[in-house]
Image (tube, one colour):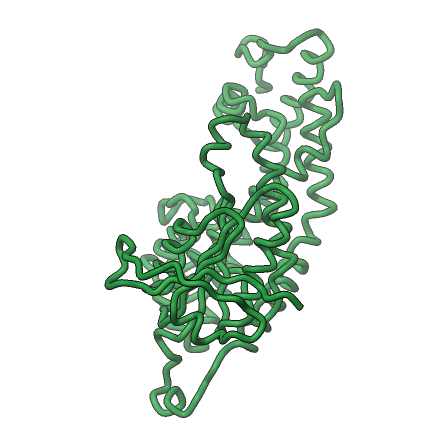
Length: 369
């Protein structure tokens, strides 16, 4: 039987008769597509009715599978599939619940192929976790930009929901090849910077900790600024900062991450990191926001695209110590970078919280050409 949407209270809250008619049409469309009354009630309560057509497109069409069936089809154990789903950030499902899509089956087949090729299961789970976290940021940015671009003044829920769904049907297939191309580019960067020497060949293992030069750059007074202006006004500040960072990062320097008001750069050599940090801070000196930077060197452990160890901690502490529009570095960085093109001045021997021993600290700037 068709749902009596008015009796169920699902038309309440519509702004006028036009919005009421549009919501009724949307509800009938969603009912025809298989959404249950409970799902429609929940979406209406959360003001998400307009987004249900998009959810259906993203879920995909085709048969549904149980986790037990996927285990039988791929040869993977149920327990491993549950672990992989957790690593993916997806909600748990009962083994015999017919909720998994063809996409879930294909992902499981890919996992089985990678494991059969020699990838250890724990490493596969770590890789899945890292990729899922990265995709979460990509998806959030895409949804925000794409969602705002498709809105029109005076839209009804039906107008917006169907426009979102139709656009996603057309543009969604482009996302996979684009992301694959980006991954290929980043993988090439990593391979170009990798080192596989005699010791690695003998042991059959890649190196653990590696010598690295690390820099942090942050926006001066960002926390205080956040207390003084509306959140939406911080967006342009952060975007300007990110654009400035992207403009100065060139191989062998790699942007590891941006965290709101800070960016982390690494490279196997000192001079490229010093040059990039000085360029960034100097460029920002002519415009807002004002920046400061700190650079350290030493052995660090690469893991999941990030770096851990003493030079990372020290670089962060040095950044907090630096004055606005200045760059400071440890004594190791000065020795590695040399004097050619730089003017170094001592900031004394300092102790920093969480870093063992006293650190020789130097301010650095470019010499006049």
